[in-house]
Image (tube, rainbow, N blue to C red; front, side, top):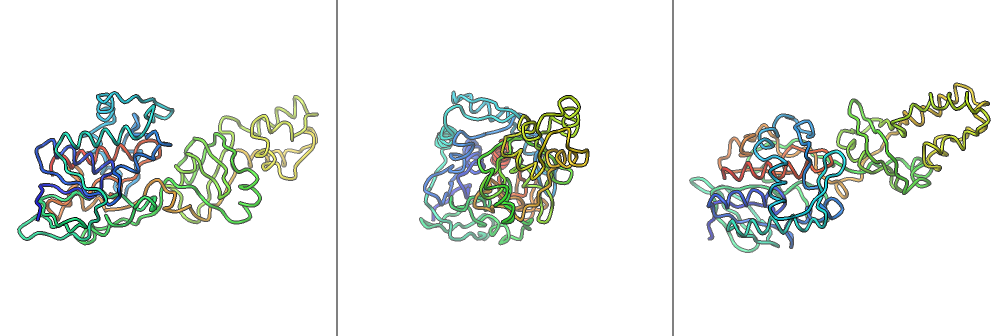
Length: 392
């Protein structure tokens, strides 16, 4: 039986970061990845350019039953620290709006960087290796049964992610390990995911408008995001919708402002006063894509001068306060992250170690810490992996 100081289950962002840090401390580290290639979610992220962090990262950008849990790890390894790592490899990057950082060239550069640092730290990587069972070792530590051979280790790091994008091998395996050792699980559901609607909405709105994008402010309850929104054949998507999806609950209504910089009622009344002969069908497309304007107007038509205040108010409400009620999401198939996960009450915030099981750690997406869209989830992966890597 082979022996290692540390076994990391999962060669994703958090797992590789943890392995690097543990290896740098002189620990013998084995990373087990059941997929053929490591870092696949990194490779496909950000349209293939990897939104690897966000310079504005703070605790308020994360969802968790304990909103303060993420603060310790985030303070140990900050966006500037990962940026320094990227810069040291001469990987060129650029910043988009809202603090998002992307590679200029390819997300593969980030994967290659992590693999190189693992190699330099003496980390052993087994890919295409299934973990068949995990047990506690008598006297402390763990026994790990794999499709290759059995392993003995002092510390075990669970970094195998959540349920999102199952076609890439995602599963509930990390949660099963947690439950096996008595840790609690916060209910999981898809996050950062497109929303779907009933048949009538799809036929009358989504299908005719599919492919149209616009800047919108999308709200659910007290939470609001202003980013791009996209009409699709299945419903609504785009960054604004993905963001709000993490806060939306079944049965709730979403409010969409299609012209967040324009008070449409005031604009309509002003236009009616100044140019009453203008047709409403030519006025509204100056603010909205033509097909969206047609959807907003419905059967309302004619000159502005002939449209009363009640109908103007109806048009304005359809623009600035359009209410839609999703029937669900596209699910884990297209979700970028999994909300919920290993209950933070059972983990040490500084080290990510299980409170009641010495040597057992959970990092990254498997934990009940989920970031907004925009590089926050990668930063949580780097930070949580780093924090655990200092002590495993």
